[in-house]
Length: 505
Image (cartoon, rainbow, N blue to C red; front, side, top):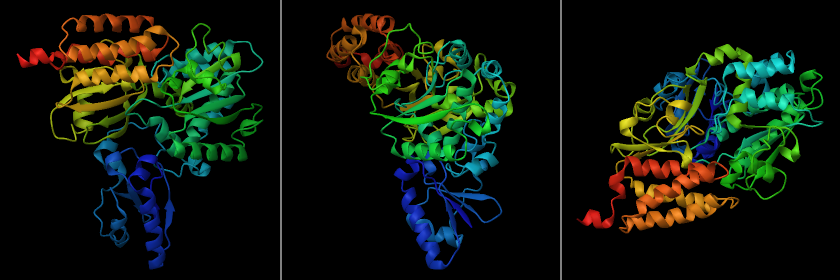
């Protein structure tokens, strides 16, 4: 008998370790031979700890499972959810990047290969640099960290740069509220990231890679470090990648958790041991990045998607999607929602489908008021615009952004003035202080929203002007995008900004 118990941080926070311990003890007491496999999460957080039992006829899911449920689980008397693949939330997905996550032991390299792992790297090794870069360009892959910049163009810039040393830097400083895709793939399928970075290194001529991983992810740090060591021991990393003439190795660096270090130039400064402040551009990191050398800086999901592109071909990946948003998007559904979790699907699903059909509406049972798309710097989209398809350009036309694809749902009890104030306060706290519009503007923004709340009728015009200045004058997205949640809240929910005096009248 094989029993799969997730080791993912979300599952562990809900008691997965205790469940695994009780299963082991109960099996020992009964004289049962049970193989407990700690897998990644399947992404259905409301069912965690989601335990799967395989008696040789396929895996049956149970969840959420508590330690008290274990005797019934081993007796075969616990009510089953059936195969995971038949649970509606899971069955509707198109899993490319997350195909192995939750299926295998994340540190079992043999299982990784048995499920398609390393096929992409083997293919890339047989290709030239220009072919590798063109394959990524043809796939239509764009940066999944938030900017949406075409990955192929970034790789081409670094590949054509002349330098004695180039670098691949993975941005794993996942700081957006309501997002967890980076952590989940590292904890559930770390070899996909390692393989993707190796392909990137071979493609652009880099021999060193760094993963900048935030300290708030101790499980991910542990798993990735162990995976890197296993990769070295098996020739996936080192002086001759898989026996080829290409050298590539990876080091995991732990960041202290400043939000601004998710911005690529702040990240590079922190990686170099400096204070994490934004650099002015140009020069671009692709030409003068880590230690002043040409550097590819890509998000975890971007790099972890590369192996499947090379395994199945660029055309296969590009067949999914909408307009210029090709492939799949890894939606992270959170907040006041009934069915929260990770949902991978082709670009193009509407917000109504994601929030109401997939997410099941609010957990509170009250009507949905808005969804914030793209993290704390994303716009609040009202229900009236829930026919908007999820795509880079489609959300931009609505004054929003897809960012890292986090969606936080709010019911009709949410006070949008308070949410706008939170956005400004968040920017004020997290600003690196490099540029005036962000450093000073956010503080003045909090004060101005307080004036609106206290009944100052002229403060709304002042807030609008301040947001224009922050958007146009800030050095990076922190100051530049903070106006998105503030102004969307003001634009779509003016009643919440009615002054106390008006409310009294």
